[in-house]
Image (cartoon, rainbow, N blue to C red; front, side):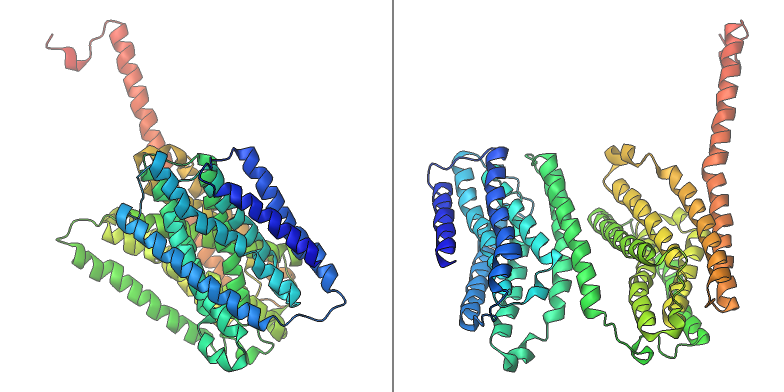
Length: 533
């Protein structure tokens, strides 16, 4: 086994020697693919097959001293990268537009190389987990993340070197300073546990990092005079988007605690009046802000230009709604369209239900920012009765659903609502990009049709859920849910007719009028505007 490792390391550093030589030239995509096939293939073979077989009948290695030194090295190395890329950004700006060629490109590749090397070194994390028999750490997220980062860094360095990802390298290296500092302190033993109280905040920092990275990548591609190939750009954006979803799922599973007793759940002792009262406070503040304070504040001010913020907000909403669509679709796949598990009678199930509902509860409060942004941009025509009523009722529904009666009764409703939100915030995001992107939002008018179909399906599901389940909702809550969905249907239908049907009728009338006028001219009947001639 030792000889095998030594052989791999010697071969690998021979490859690196070729890469970092002064005569280094960029590699073609097939050449880069061969390199990736070797590195990722060897990594997966080691951590999924060779090392697990090797460790099967052996005790875990402690590796304490090695791990302390390894993590200390990673902290120092990542801090060096933070300094390197901060210096570059100070010189060239956060949106790097130097379009390096010749000697400048050679210097840029020298700055990229430490990051490229770091992503290969990071693969040792998994090897140490397997050697210590920490198999619960070798998750799909862990392996997928390492493989994608090696692929990204290799394409970036060997195939398309540029300064396009300097901001990404800075943020990623900063997170690694914090992460490996945590690993290093953990390796020193239990008495140092008090110094790693910030462990759970690591994933939050990583989630913020992904949002900032996607925003930076978008503007870098849009504003630089030398954009990278579109396929590489979309690969990067989709990779980061997938990281966000997977890390969000990990965070919810790890830190939104699932306990086995109803008493430990957040919705403890929240009666319907108390839930309605809490929702009333939130809704009251919301209406006061958007109907009184913000209009007064904006009265003598110009509209705020919030394009970057709105783009980031809409991307976040798309990702969050996509994540919730996934978890509710997974729930329906496992338990059916009409779950019969009766969470009310099972503490374990009510805990799982509460955790699945929580992101939806938070999302309904985040949605209130839509109205705040409309006011700050003076888009007052958007702040309609339908808009305010819909947001207010959804907040009330969220409080009753999560705090008063957590159940899987509304899983289909949540699935449908979040799917629609993916489409809706995608549309908002596209329109944020400017007039030249409007052609990609041709499906705007179909959004309301989809929403109407959503309400019909949700009402149908709620009716049969209540009828067939052995644990129906309290009738008051059931009729409240049905009533609000039906009111949404009629209000959205009214909006659809006003916005699209009546406009189409007016356009048809105008078209017929113009046709009659043209026919009259063709038959020798002059129109009134030509009488003076």
